[in-house]
Image (tube, rainbow, N blue to C red; front, side, top):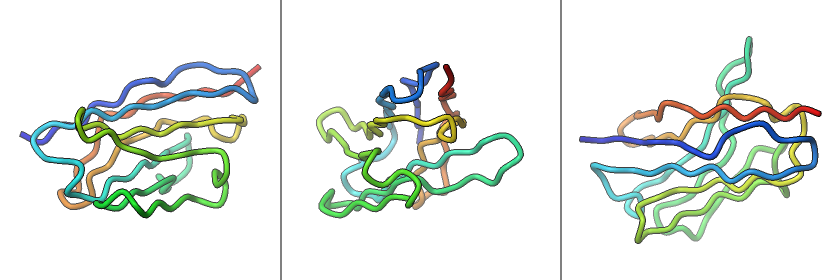
Length: 114
């Protein structure tokens, strides 16, 4: 059974950091492209970051480039999103996504506010 469980969201002040985790089961993350999306109220869900099956290639939305890093730990079958220098505009629900199966995690709320 495919399952994605996000964690690590919360409330943080501008300039702070959070690390989101996506624990996967039912498939091997190292064999697949994995992505992070986010969705703010009233806005479309947008692609934030992507990592290739090999792990050697990563891509980012322009709005987060230089601040966010996607990575994975194969031994734990887990994908991470390290978020630094957070801005209020980063406030959204963040979703781990498995594109090959069009499968989404439940989402984790990130709120950046003073």
